[in-house]
Image (cartoon, rainbow, N blue to C red; front, side):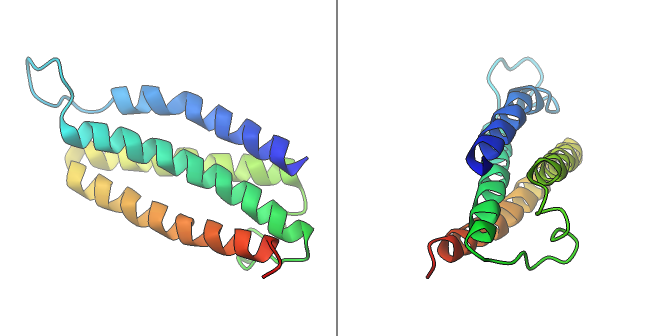
Length: 135
């Protein structure tokens, strides 16, 4: 069941990524090609969605084998997978919208923000799968 919920969440979130990536601030007037920073932002938006989906799956997998959610603000929601997916979807949307707003003023700051967030979530996901594997 948790795999279906996580897959559905990832698919739903990925639908919004192309629109967000294309809706960025103008790169260069008269240029038909997006800048490298715009392409990088699009990739970071997509990886944010994927990592959030993997966080849902890895968290539910770890809980299924006796793991415990360490974040006290999230732990009450993890016992209700649909509510957990809804919350993670809202967190993802908020993160992407914040990064998009920052990119309108400073693309380098938006890139740094998403790299930091994605790096932290990659560590969380790796830890969760480690717990889920029983190691």
